[in-house]
Amino acid sequence: MTSSTPSDALRYPAGRFEAPAAGDHSALATAIDELEAMPAQLRATVESLSEEQLDTPYRPGGWTLRQVVHHLADSHLNAYVRTKLAVTEDHPTIRPYDQDAWGDLPDAKGPVAPSLDLIEAVHTRWVALFRALDPDDFLRPFDHPEAGSSDIATLVSTYAWDGRHHMGHIGLVAGATAPA
Image (tube, rainbow, N blue to C red; front, side, top):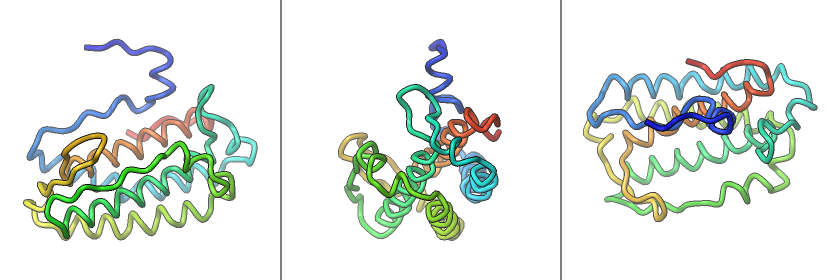
């Protein structure tokens, strides 16, 4: 067991990602429910923030909350496309992207409303796709050039955690805690 440091609490307010056991259908269903609920939770939290709070980094050297919101839109849009590739192609290799470089682009410094709308739309489509898949479809593999082989079930769990993780970052500035 690794010990947690204050730095870890700021970097990983929802804890580090732990994949559920293979075939844990209950954990998969919970993760899909989390993906469905996340856009509304994010919007409710972010819309109450001032411009100053949005431009505050969640930790020294970290992104501003504005960049976190835009990152969530970028990241979850990429994950949605990766899901569709894994469902429609035989063991595809997905394309990585430089999330830090994307976080420094001018659109990551603009208003958060378009990203909130994008997250809502992507999650609506993504959750509908997940709920329509057969259980065996969640085993469909894909390769990430940097992270190796994975499957759709792991992707679902990863991005449910990612939502909690970044909501925790926002909560560090907003005074809230990561959703349970």
